[in-house]
Length: 317
Image 1 (tube, rainbow, N blue to C red):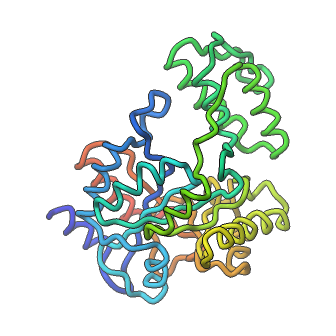
Image 2 (spheres, helix red, strand yellow):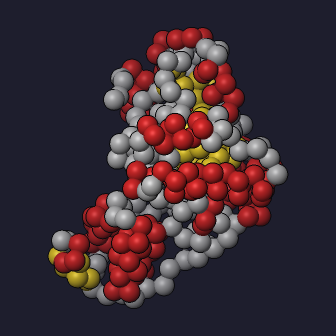
């Protein structure tokens, strides 16, 4: 009750309301030693219990319309997923439905039906390798040990940031080089199939566009960014037979990953709103083409609630 009272004070109804948008990527079958912070089914179930008890959770498209008109309920929230992993359908949706919640899933369409995102090629190559180390002098990372789980976790967390913002061709060349050095097989069933996506949508969940190949938009020409944004939407509309009005910027940090030009582009392309990964909650004065998103990483109820309240209270640039 105390948590709900504090949240109502920080996020009242009406024109002073704020919209908290939760962002997730995956819900794993079991804890992953390489990513101990990524929720598994049990953890996600617990989080959805907290969220459903504390917030008025809305479909994101409905929340956007209520935000625009100053009609949000108190403690308004929406739940989102990025990228389009198969475990969103297999693990997340059943738990969402158990708690009578809805979510919007932003899909990078180029990876449907057996595709794999570049970061997952790196992760799975390192996870499954049988070599003791790889030489990454060419990334200024030196010789990286891979003998233990701790080694591999550290390797993933230094390699991905080192290549994330490279030009697309250079990034893919780096990914291929790491994969070759690791000499490991990688999974081809990480992402949703078209049939799973259709089932996800038919179950009552929302679907939004997230580009075709998940590039850093700030590294592209505006014409290439426009194509990535519009093509992903058009592909989803063709698959689902329905309008897709929401967009998520890949990676999603202002200036680093996208710019205000891309927010203008989303508006010009006819999207209703777009979401970032900038911290905070959005109010009626904020740009609906740069909606803020956040998820506490804490694993206890009290700390999870406290960080949520801080996120509502503070404003970020």
